[in-house]
Length: 196
Image 1 (spheres, rainbow, N blue to C red):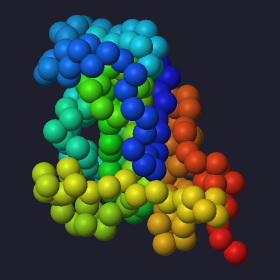
Image 2: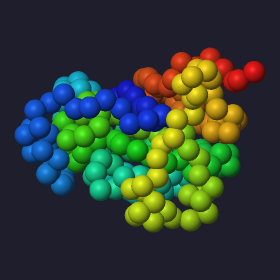
Image 3: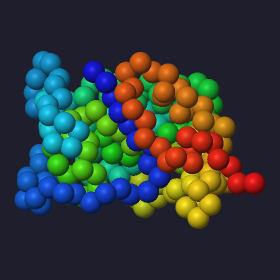
Image 4: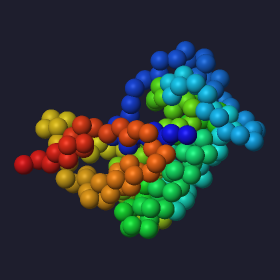
């Protein structure tokens, strides 16, 4: 099963689905009981059977925006996030802040992404907070902190104050994992463009 994930820079696109369909999916609070997990359909038009919940705290990571109930995914995705968190912790790269995976049974959401419907996408913030490394974040912090952009949109360069070698090492570790299919980042990050 191939996983794709997005390192979040800002909030993304608005939902295209009919609001009533998304509201129905958002009210489901448990994954389907199944001996075998299955991602059904496409990233932007699908659902998830037999998904797992990513614990809100783990080695090297903490989940953000708990009120959304979007910390569910295919078991392979959950294992990937846990493994990447352990890598970040073992290499002293910082604590990963995890954004959206999917809803308990996938499907369209009432806000945010059009994707994340099959349990194979995850948003990982570039913010490597020292606070999150020292302690468990409060519910308020998890709801109010922002995934700040690491790119200066005027110069199309990476902001040195927001970007570090640790960010590069996390990207490299994720890219080296065989289950990863795609990583979406801004073009300035791909180029490694720092201001002159």
